[in-house]
Image (cartoon, rainbow over all chains, first blue to last red; front, side, top):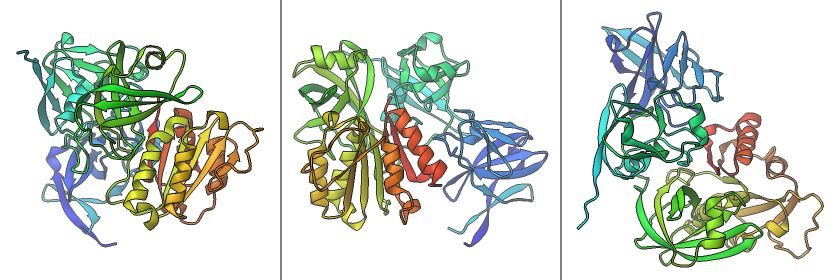
Length: 106
Length: 355
């Protein structure tokens, strides 16, 4: 599986302990800033048609806005609520004030 | 000439916004879907909470709650509404919790339809078939449902079409009637052919998608077979079953309460070896007559237990496309078996929870 880096969002667009959506290669990605580090997961909750980027960041956990399922931002693992399937996570790097995510080559 | 008032409904997320028009008296979810927005929903009946949104900058009188006692409303945070039960009476602004996007091109844009009851007949004790003749053709994909409302029965209820496409202007449905069900009572006691109904649809995403290419496994509890049989019949006609194999496990309480067995047997015949049907009889002591539908298997047990025995250890199971439909207990147990026990990806399971 070949991976490549893609620009996702400007770092300034994501506040501390916040999450924003980026659409990269037609994929909806949630980009988080936690303790000034950036993380990325798929944006659609594995429990239903909800955008995690509309949810609440609590420490290193993202809480889905619809049924309050929780996932670890760093690993994508379920942390509580009705969710049971982990989120896909993506590597990130910051360069020149921009956040890049590593995705499969299209 | 009468003019129907419309109101602006503005929806937004953190990064995007859109607006559409709702007809006065129209449910917000219906208005958004009708206008081609991919609003989130599952049951569209007030039970799942998936269509919840947050009201902002709107007069309280702009929304009428059609179902104050909706099961999902009990767990809603303050300021949130269920779009499927919120009737538009004024301009509204909402924050929604999924990406604002158009309906996928593969989905049929739902709309309102007028119809009349065409026929009502008993399939089994407490299970009725009813059909609706619509004024306009209704396009849908097998496995989808419509919301139906009758004049003297408040609210809309979801029913899956039981045929792969509309036949001669008529849509077919099944209903398990209950003594306390208002629509059940209306259908059994009051409704006559030509009684007027309103429909909204098609809705639902428990369908075969155009890019699916794997074996099918369907687990249906009771009237959950409604959408499943439409999918199976459609898949036989299209040749999908033929290129791939399919298994249907259909749970009923007893042979006396079973229905659609002739149709399922006919499907097995037409599929020429591509379809396996197992009927799960919950009644443990019922004898199955020897000559009954020899091309289907009959097993005693609850549908999920029969599914576990029939499918457990099957080669290629994890690559199949699954459908689970029926009462919440059946769907929840099915999801637990498939995803929890066998490790099937939830993305491979399409479910239809009948509330």
